[in-house]
Amino acid sequence: MIPFVIMTDTRGQKISVNPEIVQFVRTADNAHDECLIVFGKDQLLRVRGNLDEVTDKLRHG
Image 1 (cartoon, rainbow, N blue to C red):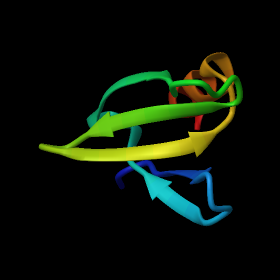
Image 2 (image 1 turned 135 degrees about the vertical axis):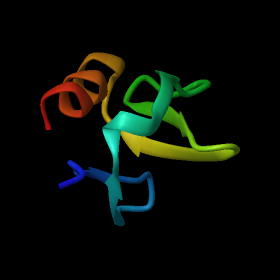
Image 3 (image 1 turned 30 degrees about the horizontal axis):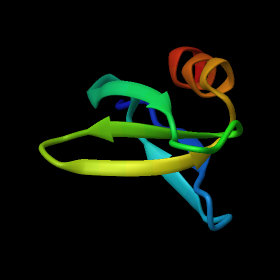
């Protein structure tokens, strides 16, 4: 079974993310509590949380 993590985007919507395909996470420009998750060929997701929170959630589900 593929593990999915539920993340909240910047509009408050819940989104399922497969952490196995995440290529990298970085902080969003001019936002201390938002991160960008890049995965797939060209998919970008902007989520709530600082870099440590988002990385930890992706790592541990």
